Image (cartoon, rainbow, N blue to C red; front, side):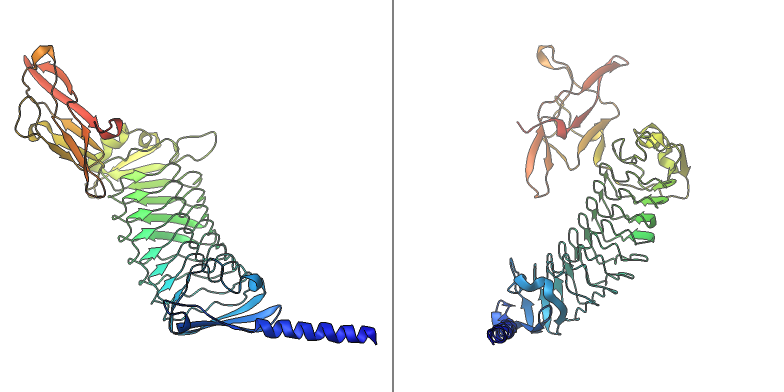
Length: 418
């Protein structure tokens, strides 16, 4: 009798707990009552239903956190506009296909991070404009082709990192302007040609590292920066096309791309890169077996440029436009002010280096000082604030046909503002 009484007590307590957990929270923002989260069912198979109109709150710890691994079904109803930060982070018990309604415009940071039990194809509706950092990171159970709609502008850092089950060709729409760091890291199931559209300006560090199924990458002409390790260990890559606006290629950007046989660089200005950008094998720091194709007008420049000249074959293609962008400002000497031949007191430089080319006649300095200098050279930073990069820096001086001539380089990275 005592055992039976204890059994009934335990059963009633369990029913009480399950009933207590079947509850509703107000989670809207800015009005909490606009959106509700309702937990139903019983452990270990809870259903969480998000209802209402408007945005969810951003969470540090959502109210269902303690039972997150026991939530197996998630329902997000139409009317929800924003999925809050950390909303379903580490809900590893979620199974089946995730359905995001077409009322959603923003998916928050870490919204579904670590939900590795989700399976099937992920469909992002064309109402979404922003995908947050780590939004689907570690969702390794997602499969099929990922379609990013052309409404998306921003893809945050690590948004799809570790989604190794995604397969097929990845299409990035031309609405996207920035690809963050680690975005598609270890998405090893992606295959075929990856095209970075002309809307994108920056490819973040490690963005596509370890995407071993990719076979070709075409980087659009709007891209200016390829981040460090951006395509590291993309072992299936055979061809890379670099757009004509790329001025910065980060360290180790294409390291261990062991199948790489062809690089097409559309920029007529050779980028200043380190020896490990195309590092392939531990015993081989060059890419002597690969072919580099560049605009014909730039062939000699690439043959003389460090690292680029280590390609086994360098081809100048006359069909490629002679276009490009450099982070070095080259100005004919007779178009700038050199002192002491004053015309104006200041020269503005908008890029990393100022190179003075050609020859210019200069006057003698007093007190046996030789050379020529700009009295003040300035550069505007990203905030359009002006700072001085050099003052009274001497140029190299020599004599030509009995005249004093000048030539030289000012590199602002070597000088601090006085």
